[in-house]
Length: 360
Image (tube, rainbow, N blue to C red):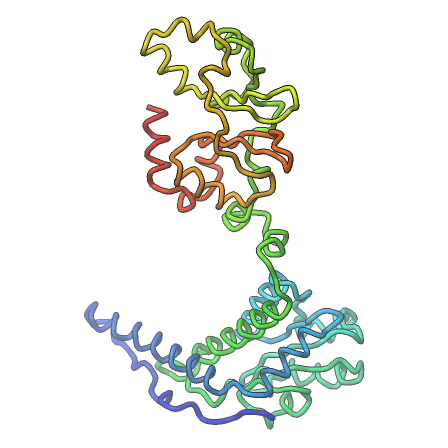
């Protein structure tokens, strides 16, 4: 079931440039490279057939690790495919084919699967590895442009890249071929991930750091915990509440908690400022429940941070109490905590502008 055919429209490569070429010529050259690689990837998608389906099933059903190998530029692509597989729920690691001959072959187990990349299918380091993999009875999925090559013949399944012309002016530097390999690797990894019904929660568990991790964080990870928040009982006066020593990290609101431990309301610094502006001294000495906002907007513990940001934006608020399933407050999400902690692109412009005014 190996698919092998010459990809149409890929015979042309980007012509060479001389030092005196204009910016227009340079741009045309760069676009020609991208167009050649893009056409090759699209042609590869049209070539997909039963062998791709079998490769997906093999990876999905693998009870061990997907061990990915390749040499040179194909090896670099193999490393990226390894990372994609692992991050999307398929245990995977990279095996350098040369190092495999000096002890690293020991990482292979009988329940593993080898995903081998070689456009020619005859890379010396790969062909030397094949008999040892076969002896271990480890199945091989090959991504190659030559199904009749040594790699193709040793593989259980071949996902063909087709016969390609590299996009470089010499027609030598791996470019079109590596683009297609990378595309096929992504197609395999993402299709298997879909079969696994890989969720946002699964993704978050594997990406706790960096910008991706912050985008997938929950409100619990960035909120001020209850013990660090300002809280009050409904019968306490505003003066009493604000006369107490503040927590080390000031929040922009007081949460009012009733006798049952549930959230009764919220009173913000903006609410206090309005009382002063109106010179409403009587309200300052009245129970805080008389001036609080009852039944405030809240978010549930465990909610994705990106969804909480949406609540902030839709309702134009700066503080969001975080409550448990029984409505008991467990913390407070303050816009101040978001600025600087989450990627700016997660914060709507109105939120950023409101915080800038607040800090001024």
